[in-house]
Image (tube, rainbow, N blue to C red; front, side, top):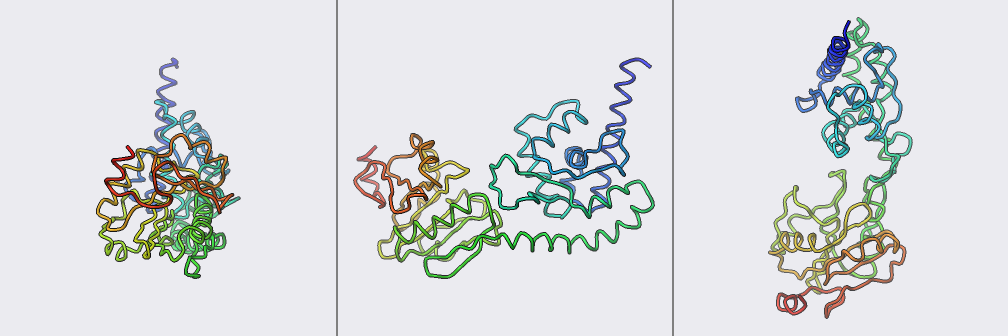
Length: 334
């Protein structure tokens, strides 16, 4: 057999295995957006299932997105996925695998932040036992039982995540819980430390959370201030209204994402252009070391605050300290 014939045969075997994986996802009830080669190859990558391995030899190691992408490139794809495809892997396949209970995210340490290099995914043990039987009569017999129990499994994993929720004491003394990890550790400090010192009597109108059910979004209160926001807007991470001064404090948590730089300043100014309250822009950092990395990017007429020194704040130019600028003031300072 010539080398070209060997390569053609290998590609045929690869595609056949990917097609098998897509069919498995179909039988597991995934939607059309997941019934494609990308999702099939990601499933095979999570299982470390090479072309020549039977499904019975599938495994479920904990793998980061980069490791999954590299494995797919090496084993299954003749046209290499670029490194920036990792976000597509995460958002378009891995997130849905986790939501369905097929995979687990950071099973070993749920509180990791989004930019932690050790973030990982693995196929759930229950799903692994089923997938090892693909192609056998046992798979057909056990698939129904698995699909019946899958919602229960998802609820169990949700209960495990609930144990790692982050309690946050609001300015009025009530308590909410945010999902653990990510920028929410900083958000907790922003609510409990920043607000208690710099926005006394303030009302929290919005808190962003990756789990939308846990966030706060006071649409009616915002509407009374002339602000109409939709769920797909690029909101700041925390919005606090100070009724005694008629100030709206827009706070960005700059732990994993950027602060209020010139571009973000313009975005927020546009989003909240109809506000009848004066706007105050604050970049919040977990510590001064992180702040230093962004200091040269911060927009003028904004504030900067670090959680490790909560009683201090840096004001970037302008005639006011923690206060809104009227249009005529802005033109005078620019």
